Length: 566
Image (tube, rainbow, N blue to C red; front, side, top):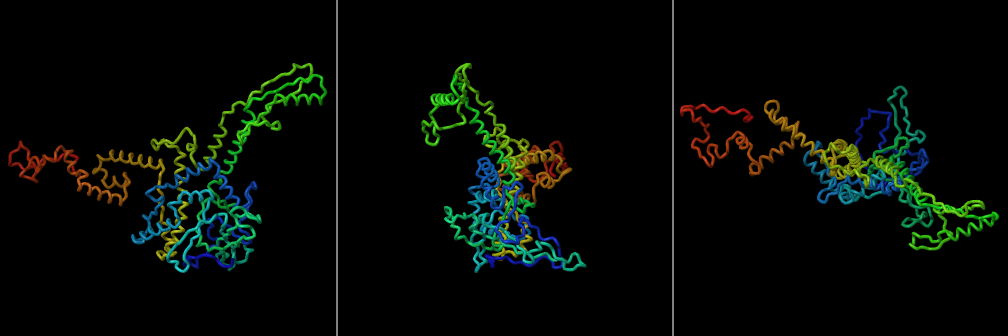
């Protein structure tokens, strides 16, 4: 483990040597500094349930198998990733990138290759689901070391249970990240400890310690040694949810652990209660007379064996068999009664009441969905359903859900950002220093299939068109046409230019009417009646028409009506 596996991307130090700070760089992924050996960072939860990140991830995966949680996860993934037959689920957006058109085209081509290498268009649902459940995802970037300029050759998925980011102090381990004062007279003259950062990969971390080995696992005797991998050779993307107290990355499912446990317990208790209280049971009072205690008990057992149900239904085989040893909590009560009583008597006990109420189950189901961020109206079997009316009628939960999906997409885009960075730098398209400037302006556009978003855009357009209709009489007096298009219709410069080109072409092709002809029709003049028209040719074409009541010497043109051409 003395040598790092993989590759490193070197860049010049952009921080001036004269700029010092006693505060180390922010630890975004919440990895602690490990000095002692050990693969996983150990921590103790408040209730002592989880002892390591290893067990925490396993707990998340077990939660995902629960039907309610699985349904909520599917709703979230389906909203975040829209699989279209003719379109990619995600595209790169370079509109705000300050670069030439040639560079933008190169970046778009490399992003397509990155998606092909990772197989995102085909496996987008599985990739996002694994990232959502585990709270993190790892990929190993495979390149040709002899020809790094060819870029990424392959990207391999790594189980989060087998890899861990480690930051180790290169200097005195006793410092534990403390700063060292170099000059006592100058408080700013300090030296932060140098930290070695690498990924530790243990392929046998999840294997059983059984000497024989489990199915599909390597025996413990052949356990492989951990491998140190360079940070640049690994693509790491986490959920962004970090427990700073325990220095642990959390999944989106973490806040639902308690709600899921409560739902499970209330469901199990409901089943037990209904099995024990639902059937009607009987009380047999058996008259034993003056028999001694032992003989009375023997007589009672004989009566029980005589009258009790001996037939038992076996649910596993579907058979009905005679089993007198079968004991059940649904059995009847047999009580002896001495002489002087009312003799043998049979009394029926009523079954449990209010067995059909599910209000407590529904409450904990809604609580589970709220903890997962999914609207309660999306619970299977809910009577409310999804409203496809006006956007003002859409529930507030749907708005919150839409924003949550947008934030989750933004966080997941770090995966593309890291892969694209490696690809562009290896192919010498950009330098590491250039990437630090360009990366802030690169966005990723996901295909959106949210009904609320469509309804919202449609209603906003209707509202804007209504304002335009109200403002139209004042265009040319208080408002300009450009102001209406930019500030009311919210059209951008590129959209205005493109729309004008399309309108000119459609007018030329005859698909749209000429605005001048439409204006003349509104003024009460038919185009065919105009001078030079097809039905009424006029020799004085191009001259203003004269009033017939005036003599021919009059040359005064008629007054133009108000509201004419601007």
